[in-house]
Every structure is written in C-alpha cells, then in structure tokens.
Length: 198
Image 1: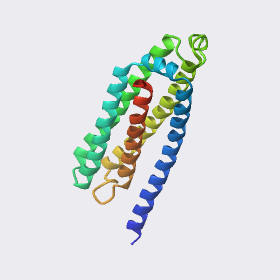
Image 2 (image 1 turned 60 degrees about the vertical axis):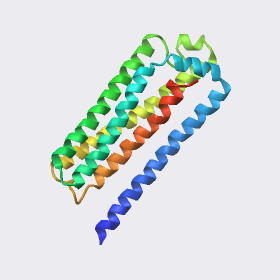
Image 3 (image 1 turned 60 degrees about the horizontal axis):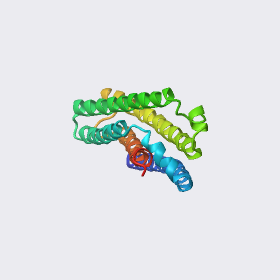
Image 4 (image 1 turned 45 degrees about the vertical axis):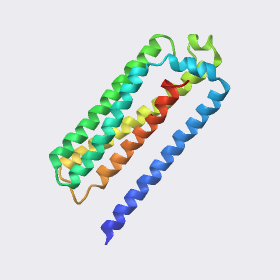
C-alpha cells in the first residue's frame, strides 16, 4: 500500500517544485515586459545583435532532447533498458551541445564589449544596457537549470544502468524528465523574447 502513496507523493512534490520554478521565471518575464514597454526600440535593436541561428539551433536541440527524454521513460516502462540508456545519453549530449553554443555566443558578445555596464552599453541607449542585463541574467539562470537537468539525467543513467530504475520503479527518471521538460519550456519563452523581439 505504501508504494502507490509514495509514488504519488514524489510526483506531487516534483510538480510543486516545478511550479515554484515557473513562478521564478514568470517574474523575470514580467520584468522584461515592463522594461520592453519603456524601451521598445532599444530592445528591438538589442535583439538584432543576438545570433538567431544559434538561438534557433539551441531551440531544436532542446526540443529534440525533450522528446528523447520522454522516449527513455517509455522505453524503461517497456523493459528496454539499453534503449532507455541510449536515449538518456543522447539527451545529456544535447545538453552539452546547448551549453557549448551558449558559451561561444556569450564569448562573442564579451569580445565585442557587449555585457552589462560595459563601456559600449553605458555610452549607448539606456534600454540596450537593460536588455542585455536581462539577457545575461535570464539565459544564465536558464543555463544553470540546464546543468542541473543534466545532473539529474546523469544520475538517472547510472540508476538505470545499475537496475535501480526499471519497469516497476521509474519515479526518479520520470521526475528528471519533468525537470528537463521545464528547461525546454522556459527556453521556448526565452527564444522569442530575446532573439525574435520585434
């Protein structure tokens, strides 16, 4: 009798945690909206300086990894351990590629003296300094969540490999998948707000 109750409790706890994360990013998106209302032209100009190709590639990477994480859960429920491990591993690699792309993107911006309170932004329109401040804070926080998600996927991989996650017991993998879907969902909002701002 305890197992179903424990499973429900674990799932409920995860959903409450995800809700708190949505509130965190939701507040940042509201802040973005307020400043965008005050500096629409500066925000549009700031968005034009971001690499839309890298942003689009990272969007595809996260969407694909979200699918493979969901597929890994289905695979383990069907008793296909090797397939589940392959899908988790692929999702983890997608996370690495996402972070590498973000590293090069940030590096290019720093190289061109585009970061909060840099000389270029201080001497430019005030809205652009705010835009890039929000860009670094939100994408940086999202990157941290990607790292946390990758850590959860790595732990799940080890647990699947050691048969501690299997067809009858997969709550850890399912919760890791839910967290990874949250990471994907947040990026779905980040991408148009910063890269496609009009």
